[in-house]
Image (cartoon, rainbow, N blue to C red; front, side, top):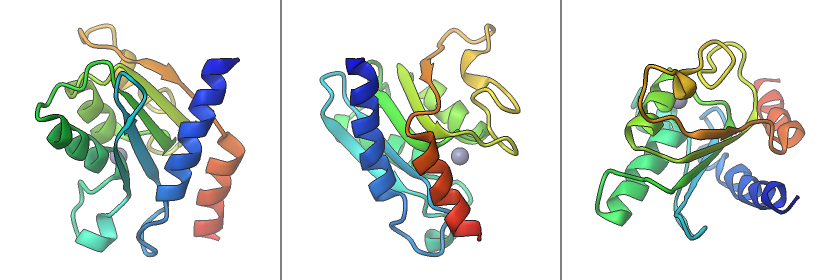
Length: 148
Ligand SMILES: [Zn+2]
């Protein structure tokens, strides 16, 4: 399937930016515009910056919005190596991201289907499309190797 192959290609880019800060849990995020061009990429920088909100997804959303010059990221795709947490799931809903692609499931904190399903709550009026488990073995291995 062509879409799956596209998602895998973007996920490889997210994997590549996941380990930008060696002390941080390796999570990488990339945001693509409606035309598929990369708007922003970020790794987790919580330890690097001492910022509790410095998750890869939030940083990528901020950078993509700055680049576009507006907070609405309608038509954009967020690709992230790990299932987003509640904060990041909330942020991507607020940013009106249209599509979320993630790699590994995060059963302890995941908010895109594991513990909660923030992005598909029928009470919200914006619900992105979700593709889960893209390059899951590679994404899960990245986390496993870090915590070993
Ligand atoms: Zn997060």
